Amino acid sequence: MELKAARFNMIEQQIRPWDVLDQGVLDLIGEVPREGFVSETYRTLAYADTAIPLGHGQVMMHPRVEARLLQALDLHATDAVLEVGTGSGYLTALLACATHHVYSVDIIPHFKEQAEERLAVHGIDNVSLEVGDAARGWPRHGLYDVIAITGSLPELPSAFLQSLNRGGRLFAVVGTAPIMEAVLIRRVGDAEWSRESLFETDLPTLINAPVAARFVF
Image (cartoon, rainbow, N blue to C red; front, side, top):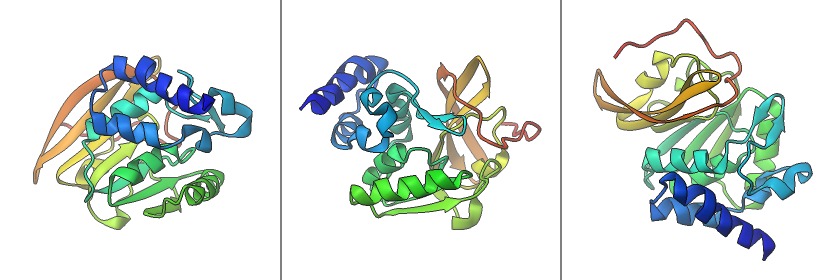
């Protein structure tokens, strides 16, 4: 009951005030137990407004950032999703519960193994977990309807944009500390993309993130 109350308070005090008003997103976050994807060391912080350490210099996003990501991506049950940075597996679970299939890749093998166990415990099986370096793109599964990049990038490689289906959506945090910009990119044509600035934040940089690649709109 205490965890259920903490989850409710997270939604009402952290997420909803941050302009997350999509009831589907709020319901999804209310249904997936975040504590199930946090190590025992930090279990008491599962619903806190903080970036929980994952090890290897990585962190879980703040809950409000995860929620804004989900809302911005406008997920559909038929979507094929690429997640770059599996991390704890929590966002992977949220994406999987709202879409057809999630391809999630992480450069750290331990994160993949850990997420595999956690997703199995919660009966989530529409996920393909892979180990690899996707900082410059991950086109091996064709085009995606949704791409969620969970670490920041100094600049966004064009390969990610080329991997979107027409009508596809991409969430990324672009820039360098201390101020980075969360953006939503949509593919609106064969060679056309739109870009929307969402909010400012600060995330650890994706391992091996390129700094020279640039895409000009």
